[in-house]
Image (cartoon, rainbow, N blue to C red; front, side, top):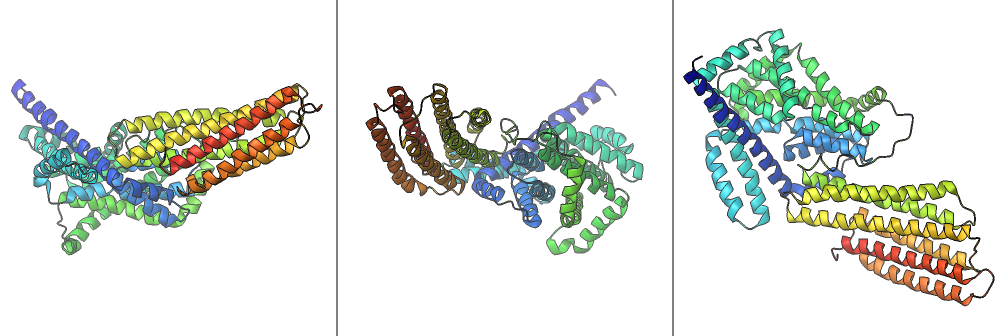
Amino acid sequence: MNDGLTGIVINALVFKAVGGLGIFLLGMKFMSDGMQAVAGNRLRSLISAVTNHRIAACAIGTIVTSVVQSSSVTSVMVVGFVNGGFMTLMQALGVIIGANVGTTITGWILALKIGKYGLPILGIAALIYLFVKNERARYTAMAICGVGMIFFGLETMSSGFKHPQVNELLLQLFATMSGVTMLGVLKCALVGCLATMVVQSSSATLGITIALAQSGIIEFPTAAALILGLNVGTTITAYLASLGASVNAKRAAYGHIIFNVVGTLWLVPVFFWYTSLVETLLNSFGHLFSLTPSIVTKIALTHSGFNIINTLVFLPALGPFARLVTRLVPDKDHRETPHLTFLDVRLLDSPAMGIAQSQDEILRMGEHVAKMSTMLRTALESDEIDENVTRRILHREEILDIMQDEVTEFLTHILSGNITTDLVEAAKEQLRMADEYESVSDYYAWILKLNLKRIKKGMKFGEGARDDLLKLHDLVDEYLAMVSEGVSSRRPEVLSKANIQGEAIAVFAKECRKRYLALLGQESATPRAALIFTDMLNNYRRTKDHVLNIAETLAGEK
C-alpha cells in the first residue's frame, strides 16, 4: 500500500469511523442523561417497587434499562443494591433478566428510518437545550439531541467504512470470519465478546456492527454472530462490580454471566435456523408493523428475539436458577455485614439510580442508630460493665462514621455533574440526614462513656433517677423510630408530630434534672454523680434536637 493510499485509509478510519463512533457514544450518553433527568423520580419509584414477583422485577429491569440505555448500568446498580442488603438475590436476578430485554431497544432506535435527519435533529435540539430556560424542556431536548448524535455518528461511521480502499481492506479482514460457517460464527462471537469486554459497552459494539452492515462489509449472519458475542461480553461490567463485594452481590453478577452465556450456547447449534427465521418473519409480517427487512431491522430483531426467548425460558425457573447460583457461590464461614462499596465510582453515570441507592443507605444509617439505642438501654439498666455491649455500641458508632463519609463523597460527586434541580435537592437532603444520624450516634456513644465513667468510679444515681433516665431514653427512642419511619415512607407531615413530642421530651428532661438536684446531699446523689447525670440528660436533649433536624429536612425546612 503506497503512502497516498495509506493516508486515505487513515483519514477514512480515523476522521470518519472513529470520529463517528465517538459521536455515537456521546449521543448515547446524552440520550441516557436526558431521559434519566426527565424520568428520574419515576425511576427511583420503580427501583423501590422491586418485589419478589419475578414478572414485576423483570418488567422493572426492562423499563429502567430502556430509559438509561445501558444494561451495564442496571446490572451494576443491582450488584450495588444486593451488596448493600437492599435487594434479595431473587429480585436481583429478575431485574437483570429484564435488563437484557431493555438493552435491545438501542437496535430498534437505530432501525428507525430517520438516519438522514440525524444532523438537523441534533441542531434543532441543541438550540432548544442551549436557549430554553425550562428545565424539563431542556433535558427533553438533551435526550433528543442524543438521538440526533446517534444517527449522525452512525452515518459518519458508515461513510468512513464505505470508502473504496477501506471497504476492500475490511472485506479482506472479515472474510476470515464470515458467519456463513459454524467456525465463522464462533470466531465472530468471540470477536464481539472481546470487543465488548474491552470497551465495556455493548452499545459501542452494536453501533460498529450496524455501521459495518450498512456499509456492505459484513452480511447479516456475520452481524448476528457478533451480536451473540456482545451479549456475553457485556457481563464483564457486573463481574468487575462484584469484586470485593458480598456473597449475594457475587451471586447476582454470576447469575448475569450464566444467563447470557447459556442463552448464547443454546443458540449456536441452531444459529442458521434462527437467522433464517428472523428473515422469514420480517419478510412475511414486517409490513404489519411498518418494518422493512433492512439489515438494521434484522439485527434489531435478532438481538430482541434472542433476549426475549432467554427471558421466557429463565423466568419460570428463576427459583431453581437462584438456588443453582447459591450453590455455585457458597456462603463464607464468617457472617458478612452489608456495606457500601461502590457508591463512589459505580453509579455516577446514573444519578437518579445513585440517589435511590444512597437513600437506602440513609435508611440503613437509621437502622444502625436504632440498634445502638436498644443496646444503650441494656447498658444503662445495670451497674456492671458489659464488655460485649460496650464494644458493639462503639463499633456501630464507627460504622456510622464510615457510612457518612462514603455517602458524602458519593453525593458530592453526583452534585458536581449535570443533574436536575430535583436531584440536587434530594442529594442535599441526604447529605443533611447522613450528618444528623451520625451526630445521633455520637451522642449515644457519649452517653455510654458517661455511664462507664460512673460505674468505674463506683457512683450510683439517687432514688428514682435511673427510672427517670430509662424513661427519657425510651421517649427519645420512640421519637427516633417515629421520625425514621417518616423518612422511610417519605411522610414530611411527621414534622408536626415531631415538634409536639420534641417539646414533651425537653420538658421531661428538665423535670428529671430538677428532681435529681433536689436529692443532692444524699449519699447516692453526690455532686460528681449529679454532674454525670445532668450531662447524660443534656446529651439526650441534643439527640432529640438532631432527630428533629431530620424531620425538618424531610419536610424541606432545612
